Length: 219
Image (cartoon, rainbow, N blue to C red; front, side, top):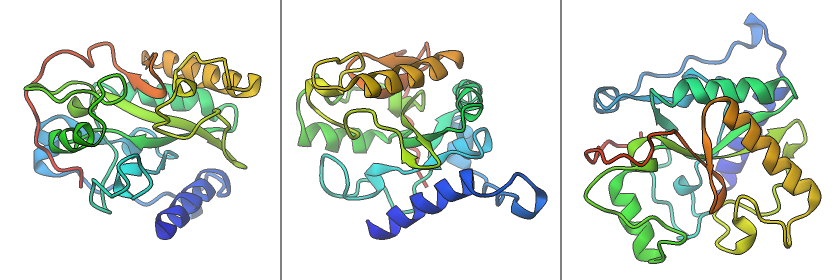
């Protein structure tokens, strides 16, 4: 987990410390797998180059307590979601902020393991015979960072308490409520809507349509 933390710090420095010039050009994003490409998935860094990728499910720092993705997991989203994320990132960039991605496309088998760990559909989506939301690459879990680090949102990721609700007020400071609203506004500019049960979760307009299960690896 320490190595992953260093990776996040390096990503933050890349986003905020380096002046935009050829000397500090970001490395090219490797192409996605053939299976991912066939499913219409893209690496989010191709449309949000300053994105900070901190996939919690590739570490033990998640509600299950063990890694559920390989260490080299990538933040993949469906290509239809990419323009909205680019628009949201552009809004935040004007304010000196960047998007931090905690989860993107999620394989079906991981969703099954999550529900086995927390079999409560109020907090973890019950896996079914179709791909929706994260399983379809049409939902992301995100927050905001600036040059000082993560912005205060009142809770950490996957906070399974009422404080984690998108519009929670009790137990959530006024500043954190304003930060959540700023994130919602930026994502709304890209046509993405918050899930009321989780302040960090955002969907495309068609995220919950029934689609075939992808079974695409995240690396």
